[in-house]
Length: 596
Image (cartoon, rainbow, N blue to C red; front, side, top):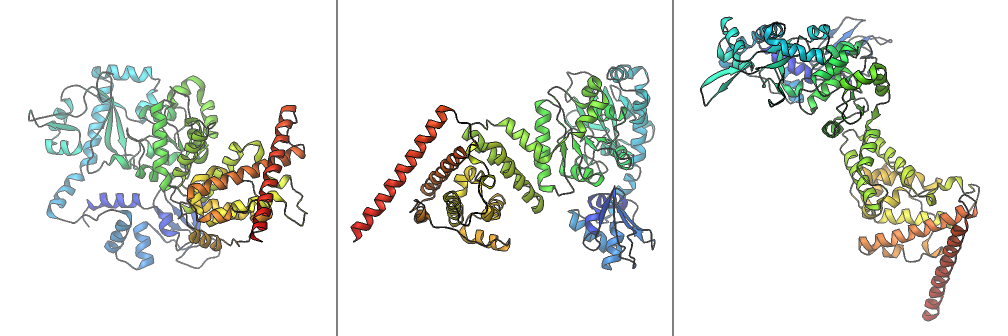
């Protein structure tokens, strides 16, 4: 195998989450930063088989068997080396490179790329401490960056003009190679090359092995745009797959540190300077799918902490939207929210490391972050604002890839929704009713009818969702009510038969307890064949009737403050309900008389 093929193999191994590959054959249990299980290669009663995603290796301390993802496929599926590589490549969405004559020539060049970039890095670090780099060094001192951090992150300075190009040419490195590495650019109009980075503070970008693969440069003149400039994509630098500081963070995870995703290079350095060495940053763009997978290889729940300004908060929400389809119960995010105008660097300088760590401990879960963000974005005191809040929240939850996680989040949503947005009249019935009563009272019968109507016409849920969500239930129908909500929130077809199949599959027995004509609501079920909007109006009217019953019940039990105005209002509502029921009963009697 040609030496250059190793570049492809490194990308392939980075794509494969080894524990996911092995878990179908071995029951793995997470232990700290690794997974443990019974070795599949020899018989044992005590687990000695260890999988380390961060290293891409498995090892058995009992029989000594060890290897990478490629070895695993070869040993468990009986494949040869290339067949195993092609199998993993297909599953990872990569194409195995063909060994053409042209590619063999390029591989010979690529073998020296890392050496050349190391020379470029040394050139920049040297210039930082010479006369040309005086302004850049002064900027770092102004930002409070210590000499130790300057050395550790190998910060440098790219001088004006074409000094780097001249230096590399003297080292025997031709212009074509420099172009391929992205350290010089080409002006097609003027027909000449130029240093890609000029007059900028330089941040080397390292791969997971700590080797320089690219650079980021900050303009010292704020009038120069862009403020930050990264190397272009090259054969060894893929911006969407890398994180600044990841080689340091991988070590920090072994020391029990938290992994922090922050916005920029200076934030990473500032956090490292105070000992928070688990900080990483995307390379000037919103965090992408491959970068999320990279952090999840190191920790199941990284903390996202972007700047507190509007742009930073928008970037955090975009990261959330990108993460939702990828999330699993062991692949989540937390969110550390800073005040507007603050970033991790400025916060620590003002309030110190301890306060920042305190904020880290209180980082919001994904659910809490969505709730807080959307609630702050909508006027939930109005019906329209509450409807928009609910709609956007559920649309987000529907994008969660993991069915188990999606169901759990929906359950938490309607539980919290009911707790926060139900009025006083929607108190749980369980605390108010005598559970030993052999017969169901009228209020329970109404709830039974409301639920039965929804099962017969599930499409009505799109119109009565808020009321149905806040509908208090009683013990006999509680699991049925929850199952209907689960079905709705999962985005399933709002049709009667699919819903009934879902309920049956989940062990729900459809048992209805009453008939509408026994409690003065004859006709509600007869309207099932009408238009959905008309049906929703009838359902809502009946729901509000139940709310009246519930409020009257609470009033009689002494659960509501009895001021004079309220007492009079309740009495009027009781009289109104009695009159309405009497009229309905009289109408029914007249109809029977006419039929005789």
